Length: 379
Image (cartoon, rainbow, N blue to C red; front, side, top):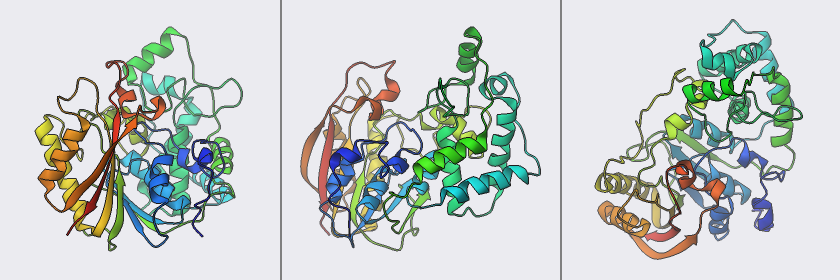
């Protein structure tokens, strides 16, 4: 039976056993779990859900809580790796055993060098982390244990130094994004902060027992794809009843560099890269809405007649001359593929820890209310 009787307070409590998996890795720009859950509480258990900007898989996890199959696409490797874990169940003992086996049977790995790496991680911790990185990025096909291990490691890769037992592998850093190397080195040096040893396997053991507990919702079918939702085709054989998503705000294009350390763990460069490949164009409002139109058009091709499209969207102060409503209306009009807007409601002030604008908090003031757009596919 779909779990349609969950107390909504549970969804707001990220430490509740049912929703811990949804918080497996802190990540900017997520919308609250309660939003897609409320929307999908009106769905049937046989419906199919799609998110073309799935991010870390919040829509997908809401669908899973309701026993509904879901699918998602994201162009960011970090988001893709996190979202994949939202659709699986794995035994904590198996995850820990896999981690220990990898570390004990390593053939070696490339250890990054330089002042940042010397200060970011204890050398022994960094060696274990590099061994794990080497395994995950060279195995031709990851099974569910690997997917779980990868996501848990991404979640503990960097964060604050705790006063009791360690919860993260790094020297003092934020949890949601990785500070740039020069800034990090200056910060640590000025405060004489040295990285302490953290036992990677033991932390994995503790985290997996906490996250992959026996109260997780039943596994449902679905798939998360790494790709560009403007153009990607023929990856899902199904037709969707619901498209629920939250596109990047216009002007927000720093996903890669903000997650550069997690990107390194996934096989990326040891240095910050400023590529925007695979992202919506942000050099003008016109280019942005044209790219959004491509996503809506592509989603329409994947959807059933009368499918529902729900979009949560906002704006960064001083970034756009148009309101969120104007940008969405323009993009849907450009798509010209059958999506008809039924209603647009204000979603109110974004929760600070979950808002996309939080990524720009040092350079912007105030906020612009987010909107929820409800449309149906008339074809």
